[in-house]
Image (cartoon, rainbow, N blue to C red; front, side):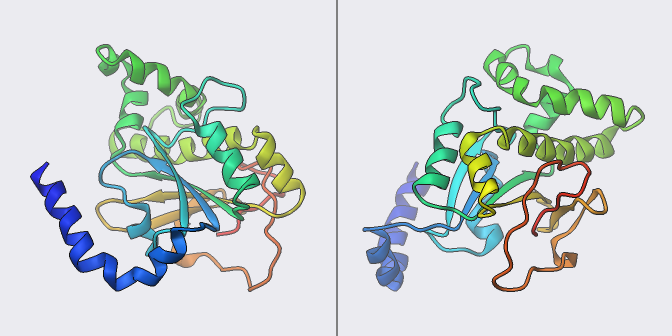
Length: 230
């Protein structure tokens, strides 16, 4: 805890006053444009990865970056999504998985969770991911299995996300775009899903939409005519 105490003092004495105008504005209002959904893993820092300031991201974090389907028992994800869209009017939702994810390891080896029943119960929201990977990649093992499990889980959670009424309404109004990302801890790289190519590719290779372009709607994240905006 001493490190945390020292960090708070450093923030107040050396950081806060250098951005006092920003914090004065944030004290009265927030207007994030992006809901960023990612893992609770201590190695993931959404603002650091995206080089954004306080107030830029509205964040949901949990083990495995999971979004239970609408109506399922949750820990607050449903309410947070609804608030982000209806009260804050966010225009983008990013679901960001990451390399070396403990939750994905738990999906691969559920027996290792015998002493963590709450974790095992939570991971039922990724059961579709586990079954899909088993069917699509029967030969995958080791690092390759971790990679495809992580990537497919992001797509599964986007499918769950689209069951939420607030998301459906925003998409019907063409006011929301949804992004699938995977962050690599070792390299700092981010891959995003290209639905046209059916694969994750480096974010730097994605063509950015022109300013003022209307976000494209997302329906079938694994095929069809729908597309992500990266």
